[in-house]
Image 1 (tube, rainbow, N blue to C red):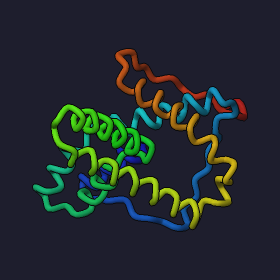
Image 2 (image 1 turned 90 degrees about the vertical axis):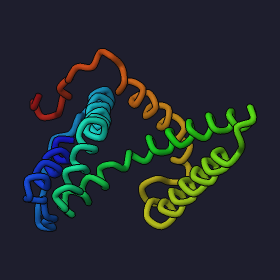
Image 3 (image 1 turned 30 degrees about the horizontal axis):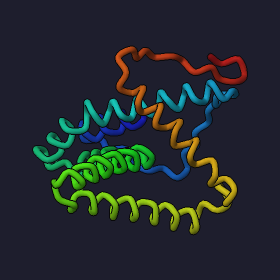
Length: 174
């Protein structure tokens, strides 16, 4: 999250980050499942905070200054994580479906169904082309619990009591 924000701020200052294929990043990752969940929650909440607080002003600045780098980075950052995008689309489609049943018309509901269908198709095509070694067919069964965990993370993002908790890491680093 800090990297995302730093990249946006650098682009805003006219110094957009550049890709460096020779760069290497080394890090100590959490060793326990609980620590990994805590880290993931911090990342997800941080990304959402940037989406909510920073992107509209930065996009406005990019347009006003005709800063293509900042606009490109802002648009890239504006795309929510895939799971959140899917969950939001599903919720909107269900709301529109209820509206259609109450007589509001079916166009929005059908658009939502088409969007969900295309999202699922794109994910399956990407999995088939590049993800089969990472997620086996039997591993697909874990998607339901994974989505439930992610939904909980996103629900907590909007909770009133949010405080930063440092993730415990391996090798004695805290």
